[in-house]
Structures are given as C-alpha cells and as structure tokens.
Image 1 (spheres, rainbow, N blue to C red):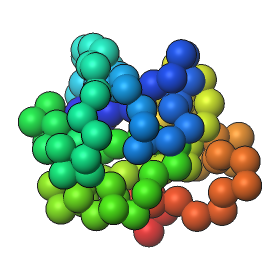
Image 2: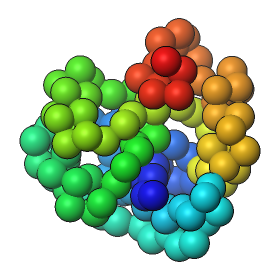
Image 3: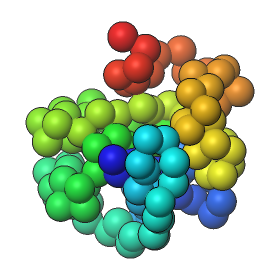
Image 4: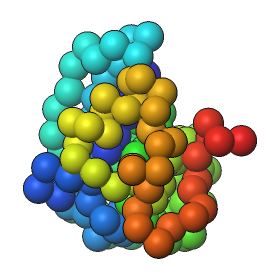
Length: 119
C-alpha cells in the first residue's frame, strides 16, 4: 500500500490545493518498506489526481482540501484522510499505530474529515 502525505517543511502542508511536495510511503502490513519525496507542481484538480494515481497512491493524508480536489481524487479510487495537522514523522507513526484519529492531529478549528476509517 502507498500513502502520500503533503509536506511543508517537516509538517503536513496546511492546504492540499497549493502543496508542492509529497512524501510517498510504501507500507507492507503497516510496516514502512520504503519512502521517497516527490515534487508535486501540477495545479489543476484533474492533474493532481492523475499524478497521485500514477504514483500508485492508495491513501492521501493532507491538511485542508477543496471539494473539487476531493471529487477528482476519489474518482481515482484514492481514499483521503484530510484536515490532518502535525509533524510528518509523528503523523506517519500515528497512521501506523492506528491513532491518527487522535484530536492532536486534527487541524485547529476543523471538525469534519474525509476519513474512510471513521465511517
């Protein structure tokens, strides 16, 4: 499974729509088996969704995200965990341990999430 995280410095980028970097992490049974950074400079929702699909991403973890981006990404059968905040390493560890739903990883002021695990 591949999980893409939006990156700004060493944190989750606050807005998917304008992020310029991704960290793509390869997992095998929730164990990290590889990771690499990707320049993510496409601007349109369709192009960003296509790039994620071409990278083989199964799950996107990001901060805030506009509905138009959500729709294109979901059309590529990519699950989204949005409105996430925090240090990249901490977020990865929380994802692996199943604690990403902890309120310390929710962006301030955000109550709703696009989170397939929450359904």
